[in-house]
Image 1 (cartoon, rainbow over the protein chains, first blue to last red):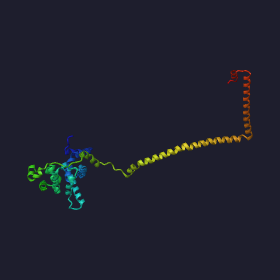
Image 2 (spheres, rainbow over the protein chains, first blue to last red):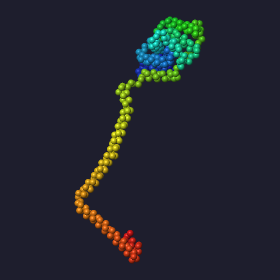
Image 3 (tube, chains in turn green, brown):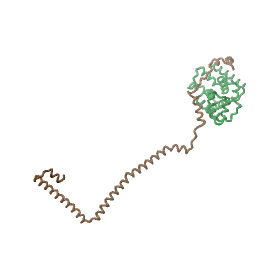
Image 4 (tube, each protein chain N blue to C red):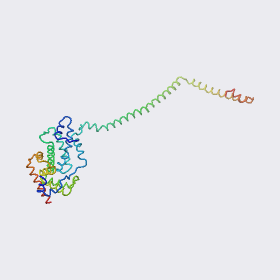
Length: 182
Length: 155
């Protein structure tokens, strides 16, 4: 099956009687990319599954009013990012104590995660990533792993390209430092 | 940031293979769209009354079946017991009525005469039998053959 473009999918969605079909095509096209984006933020598979579902439910609810002044995929990424960050904030407030570092907890749980297969150096890199501030970690993942354009990242994170470049640079330096010291 | 530039500012990081070490359960992406659809379009939630009907339906059916069995059993027992008893009682009552009627219609003297006549008839029959035996004996003594005798008597 040839893959529909985002524009074609939106047009199909808006045609009468094709909503479910078009939505399913959108889900199948983006589920993996969104999953890995969320997974790198929240680490745990079950949490990722919940957030991915919430993301796509919100997309279903908002697709009717979706304005095509942004791309479909950046819109979906934006929802997924917001849902993931909201999840981490909720997790932080659940602990009540500000000294409890959720990222530190995620880093420890990574070693016992049955759905993680990285070797020692990969694990070290993930721990270095989890030591970064939330926004720098986000920017690093999107640039380094997803190889996303700064323009698209700016649209998703609602930040300027310059600020994103700076964040990425800081993130790389911190990771390098972590790797050298550990 | 190009790889060359990354190598300059982060030599250790640039040596690490860029790969995704996270995994998902087998078939996760195949089943995800269906699970999502189930969440988006859950089955219609039933009202309290509908749920109550679904819950009591089997119990109600069982109770109805028991009632049916008892009704059938009741009629069956009635059919094979009380009706027969009534029938037998009716027959018995009929015979009693006939006897009572006969006793009322026939007086005692007539009854005695009837019994005496019956006894007399029995005596006559005995006398006839004795006469026939005597006659057979006499004829045999007189030389009449048994075959002839049997033909005459049509035995």
